Each structure stands twice: as structure tokens, then as C-alpha cells.
Image 1 (spheres, helix red, strand yellow):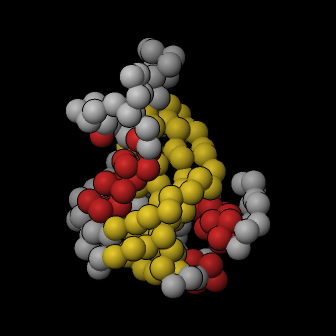
Image 2: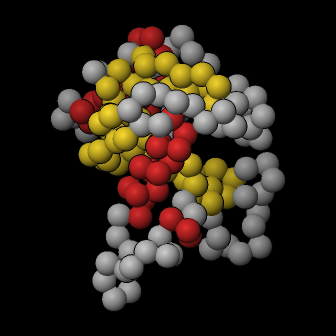
Length: 163
């Protein structure tokens, strides 16, 4: 575990929705965590995402996660997104001892063609929930897709196994 008990890696992911389908990407084989498995785009929050921007109030920057997510999706898959909404959160302590918190969101596709950042992902697909079952998704991602789908239909859902 990390020496600083308050220090977490914070990441945010986007379940991007376009025409009722979800964008999934296959992680590059060179990735340290989950190489070759399917997931959704996203990435880590970095201080540089906000530290050089003017604060929104005397003390704080607002919408930091949303801005980070928009940047990560643009960098990883070349898409512009909007209407970011919270879906769920998850935590893990990675084998190297780094604790992480991941915030999973759903967002609308706005524009762009998928252009993969090769060091992050090597393949992509737009899938329905039924089609998603055929992919080697990181454990829990399918359940998040179901939650996002229900959220879009106005239904509330806490994380659980749906598959």
C-alpha cells in the first residue's frame, strides 16, 4: 500500500453513447493493467488538468472530473462528448500497491470519428448490450454498461451483477 494513506490514483471513465450503442475499446497489448481486454475510454486525473487554470471561486476549481474526462476521450478516441453523468465508482489496490478510485460516467457522443491513440487502445466497437457480451470485457464493465443504459431510460441502478 502507498506510504501516504491519503494518496489515491483517481481515474474517470466514459461510457460514450451514440445512436443507442456504447463505445468499447480494446486495451493495447503493451498496457501494464488488463492488456488486450475490452473497456471504455478514460484516464487518470492529473494536477495539470486544473492547476494552471484560473480558479472558479477563491479556493476551488469546479468540473475538474468532467474536463479531465472530455480531454481523455478526445485524446484516446478522438471524440467530443457532452452531458457527463455519474454512473458508479469502484476502488482497487493494484498489485504494485497503488490504491485507485475510478469514477464511471455515461456521456453523449457529440462529434468526431473514432481515432485510437495506439499506446492506449488497438481496436474499438460500437455495441449494444447484447453484443457487448461477446467481448472479453474487464470484469464489471458489462454491469456498468447496463447501469448506464438504465440511467438513460430514467431508471436508477446500483452496481450489481447483471450478466
